[in-house]
Image (tube, rainbow, N blue to C red; front, side, top):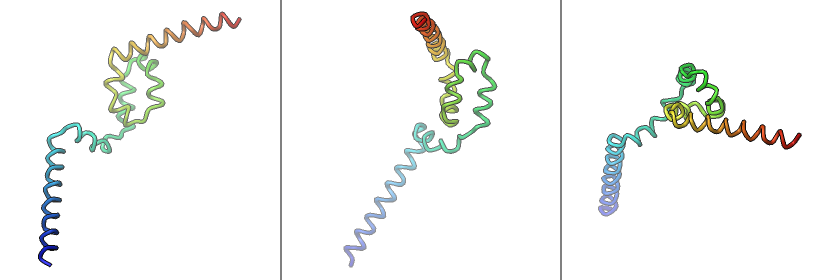
Length: 109
């Protein structure tokens, strides 16, 4: 019997140490914190505010993202989506699409 008690006590001590390590990791690591806090962010209202704050051109460029992405992802990626380099990529894609869609129409006629 004493051996089983000792093993049980050792397991409890190990479990307590592991829980302490996890707690300190969560406190110190902001990436982990943000990962576990994701459930607190959902927000159709916040995404709507982001959409309302966009200029007309940005709304046109980001329409697909806002209609197809989930609200949580939109809220987390809002700064990337509104960044100048991303908007420039979207502009170039639209120009490329217009250029080649008119070229294919000419060849079909």
